[in-house]
Image 1 (cartoon, helix red, strand yellow):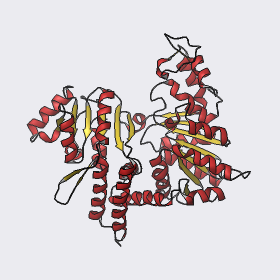
Image 2: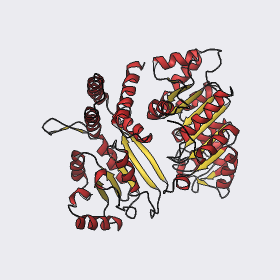
Image 3: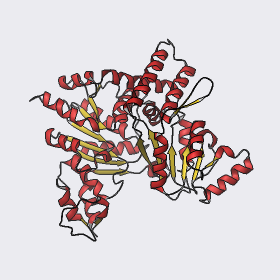
Image 4: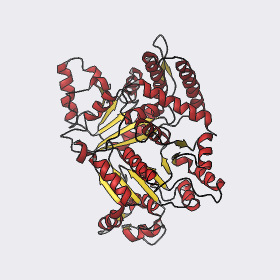
Length: 468
């Protein structure tokens, strides 16, 4: 595809070229990754930079960046090396790639690779911290190890749509990672004592409680905003996309070693079977993706439509979200077994599928919009165009993601639309390194067919084969 930047992407690029240390507080859907690649393309072509390191969550590092590079004609010449693989590590040691990707949990691997290079210069002079809020903990061991061991380079860019998920204190470690402590300093306790106070405690005594207990002083917000203004560009989705702000939070569903082994065996067998097809068979691709999604959701159907229990991890996560949010939840459910499980666990939940005609659907919709339904469960295909749910809640939970871009966007648009009074929050329950990641990646890149899912799955499979 040909890349033609839109106005917010032009603004991002102009800022990155002007400010070597940059904070991009940019909402989802604006295209900040492509804008960064466009900037790198210019820097590389002008010999103003020779390589970039991308530190990101696992799925974003494994899939988003390499697929973004591949999809745009202007950037497809760039070679991407994944530092979680032997091949990628060799490229790093020999300086044979343009972009090197690593996840936040793999930063110790990065440090080891830097040490193995000895006195040779780093193969990159731009660092991109994607989803920068992953670095909000000032005591994070891996990130602090990286800060101590790896030299700062000429350019550091931090990308996030939600820079302050909990409080202003969350900014400290993120800004420090980007500017090396120039604006907020390097000591979190000093930062906290300077700009915050603990109402019922001695603020000069060491504190071991929650950071949220410390309140900002009267001038703190204005002061902190002023300190980072020169390196920050802020672009809200609602300003450019004409929709209410929407915040996305991926909830990691961690498999036990036994579950991981079962999943990888199933995935390998199915992907291998599909790869033997000379021409991609869409029906087979859909069947493959569906079977893997069943596994990550917790139950698998056999050929006779019998349901076999695998795990209950996503429903445990749903219980926690319901408790933490304490407000109506709009739950997207793909499989019947999910709805059956929710009926058992949440007797107060109502199901859009139970409304069999227009009259009962309207009654249920009215009840929801009046705030009388604590949990409304629906298949994305059943709540498409023309239905307005925005008055009854602002939180969506995806038990299992759909790989239909239309269903996905329309489900979210039931709440994130004109008339919504709150920020729409979208929780996505995702088992890292599985088909859940592949589906999320396909949705992020607006994929419309199963071919992209299979490409993502095969990429994940190849990473596992190469992983050290």
